[in-house]
Length: 300
Image (cartoon, rainbow, N blue to C red; front, top):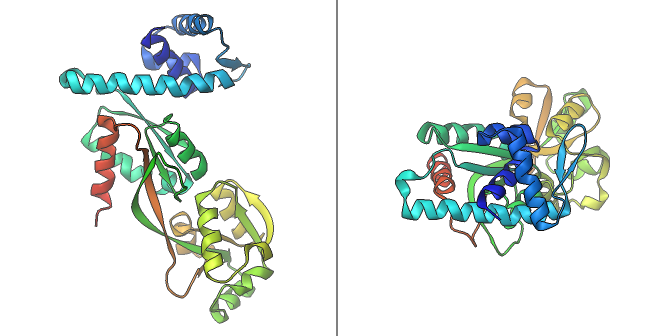
């Protein structure tokens, strides 16, 4: 088995495409196919399931991917240590992020990173916080950004941003009256509630803060469980229900008056957003540079 085979395999897995992997690696598509075919024969394993639209890793492919990423990261580390001047600037940094940091903080973070390190390649994968932490723990991504911290012995969490959670409601007469007269969250029990999906950091933190405010989550009338933050915001604007959401995510709608914001408590209720990486492995030069950028941007 050659490292080049693993590099090609990882690129196909990352981009879910033989043609895209070929373009990134400056190879022809038949060459990429030949590398994958030879690797499958050598391992006596089927690594990808193919259909007319896209490809997906099989269970065997997923297992191999973790090892491949570790070996390629180690190769890069060896180059950094023994021949730093020849280390390829185009080495790809894989970043996983949950919805809120991905959409509302990463654009500024990536702009700062690219300004200082213009030749670095970044791949961003958006998912929920639970999946981000799982991918970091398995070392299939280099760095993660999450809306919550889950116990995992190999993960190190660096809090870098304080995010306020708020209740947003349709801008109607009834909800304007609620906003004027209510001073706690007990009224939420009677309202149709739009909940984020299982695994969402926002959902996990919202449940914590409701419990702190004395509201039993089991008593809330959950009208729907929704993955998309944008779908939830549009649903609230259309009068379908209320939700608890990051103030970052609802900033524009609150400012425009298309939704109303009810604070979680009389005093602002915040949750931390985290940068997370696998503490069992030495950070690559590119990952270390990204950590520095985050600390510089949010150190104040």
